[in-house]
Length: 103
Image (cartoon, rainbow, N blue to C red):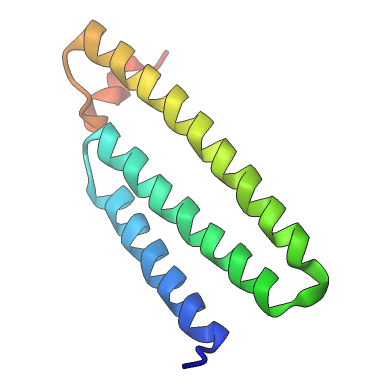
């Protein structure tokens, strides 16, 4: 069965919308990071599919995916470190409480 690229783009769109809705609706900083990771993974799916269906940019698409995965891992490590530090100092990771940390 030969699948068209639009099927994969549709799956990536659904994944992005789930991540966006999760980011908007959640109050926990950890859930927000997970939602951001979903959005990054949907972009990776698009990079890989466009690279597969466009032979001239095959290597560039996969390089972009690898760089994006490395940046997402670094973002998750730094984000979780910040969240752990905030939790140790303030006892909560509720995003609505972050407003008082300004200034």
